[in-house]
Length: 400
Image 1 (cartoon, helix red, strand yellow):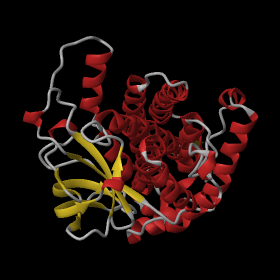
Image 2 (spheres, helix red, strand yellow):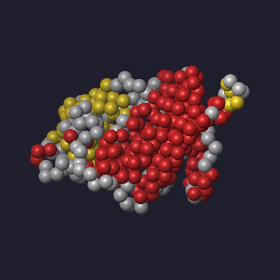
Image 3 (spheres, helix red, strand yellow):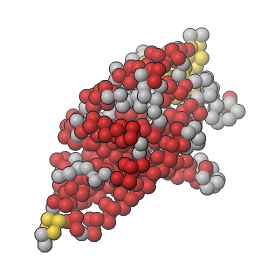
Image 4 (tube, rainbow, N blue to C red):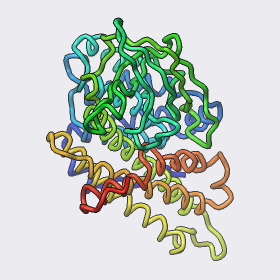
């Protein structure tokens, strides 16, 4: 059964030769860790160490990182192409999360806002796979309202002391460094709501930092944790950006995260549709015709494909605007919203196309379906994405 769709030649010809070579390389690396690999580690709840190391060895973690630290210094456009191709090769959207926690939470934060000392100490290790990252942002009482976070770093003569709680933090046990988003000034003491937020890059084995795993539906290869900070010391050299002015820096991290999320969802859609189409072309019932000839099979799969192609174009626009130094938040949010819908539809209809076998782990789509459902909630919920568009694109009154 073919798990790859026929390539879209019009899209392929719109890429430069270097971009096509990059996509080909990603498919080659991804093919070494195909559907069976991901089914196996999903069943064991095992982090994809071997796959991530192969990605780093091929130089794919550092696509958008500065050359002076070992990266390729390409754009977010190339980065999105790479993530999409790797996810389409067997992993699905889960692999895009590995890029998020490392190349975005670590790489973007450090390369855009870190000191030269931080970059020299951490970026090469990020790119060779020897240092992994996570980000502690979400809190139980704040959710997607990041300005409502309460985790607080109190200034001392040695730096800061951190106290608070985070939730749904990805890959904490595997990470050596944690990008912590916290308050350093209380909300009642700032002029603007966006003031008083500060970012730190700290060690995950720091005394007073504890974490507990959350039992969840999918993305089993990447644990999610509740994190507790109790009098955790933070040092001046761990500051990312400026004290009390971390909000703009955080938005750069979050908006690039949207682009990577969308790329992973597009890869998932391609993968799920490839499995469904391959099965439908082979499966014959009733009159001996393949079930792919039935419009009841064709139309839902076609709708998911159409949605994904539109999301791809919007994600390319977001990435291009990013690379040009122009605002891209609206495009990133719209692309993510549409891609999550497309991937959800594609994985659900793939199960329906396969019938009973779609419910079996043997055919892989149940894993893709479980993992994909997360991304209608995260890293930004559908509702918050619509709020963003309503306010920033339509000029409607702020709802929150």
